[in-house]
Image: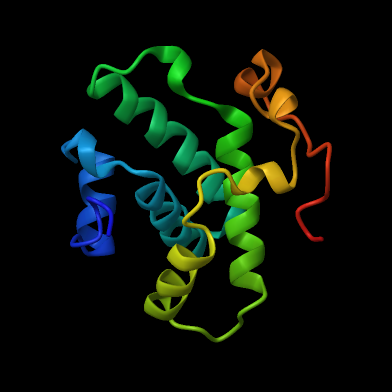
Length: 138
């Protein structure tokens, strides 16, 4: 279990958006759960914008360096989660969340789509870089 597992999605997102969520609770799983919430509530494009702005605001509020935000990782996870949701029409938020946490518990999952050098590059941190190993729909 992760530090955020006992939080409802509403409490997680509310704390994230208000920047009151304890830093120990802003785990990889919390990121993925928040992405799922935004995708279901607002669609993929708006979810990407909300995650970008939210992560930057949250990082600044908890004293993280401005360079901690990573554009490609954020947008890649939105793409992965959106495709996960699209492949499971009619599923409830709760069912999707449970499956999502199991399917994407490994924060290194993006290495199925990117080489580490490309994903961790300055260019990928600053802006969108497409996958260099496999497309997201593979």
